[in-house]
Image 1 (cartoon, rainbow, N blue to C red):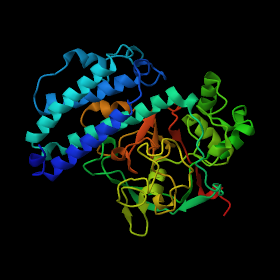
Image 2: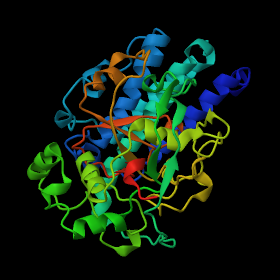
Image 3: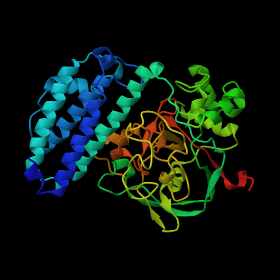
Image 4: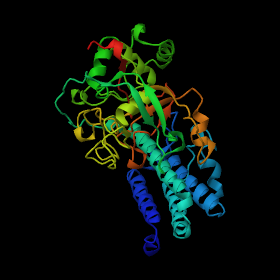
Length: 417
């Protein structure tokens, strides 16, 4: 097969990306037993075993059935592993891990056979979508597995000097290019379009655990003043007093706070006299090179994400200090915009002008419902294939995702220069 692939640079790149991504996926299951495989640890997320089966199902559906025209290899799994097949709470009745792996491996064998003979150039976007699809489910797998083991984790001392992280960066008024038109771009990132923003300020670093502790110590969860009406309603129902899986150990003071809902992020920003940035503000600060008047794929340029630039791909296995990756700064001097933790923004998840769904309506379009807030930046578990400044994540504002944090912004008139 290698000799056939060498005739097409595109095929060769896809082949190696498929294999690398799959190796990373399977590594997550090295120590997963059947109880962990089937347990639902969070009502908003399916059991980890379901995600493994769904990866195989989606690959089979689009590459074998739709592209190659083959019949469904495992029709008995169609309802179980389809995204719209069963409610999440009913996805616990799963086959054994060995059976799911057999399903996964059998589908992949057929996919690689199809790759040998496929005319890949017209469908390159589909193949790259499916690599990213698996990467995204790997991150969800990481999240669920983190919940399963969080109480057993010891604190590792990733500490750097705790510089003042209250400083903000001024982003000058003007247009920038938002979005992404590359072959890797998902439908909700397309098309690139120009957006004008007035001058604003944005935090150089994500909000840290040490900073968030000040909010908690000042009675932030008890003081109605800092909460919006909807945020206060959520808090009365949620009855929480701290972020999800909060670490009180001071070794985490310089790490980004995570495990907060959008409402908690909003309340903190009010507490410090700021606000959450809009998605456009976040993306301009992370991706725009004002001197060159151009958009960067990554904050630091065009080099693919590695451990030199950011905390991603589970290479560290937890959060790191917010100033740990100086080479990953954006042109405006922001740290930690990619990797470490996802960052809530003030924006609803909506389509860009000229949006066209791909490869199906259910991927993005059904979530344009004014019920989901945008998160940007990726986390320490995000795979490189889904890590770029234009990438858009979305959650209900009530979701407390342990990979999600935030940074604050402010209007120029609110800052004492």
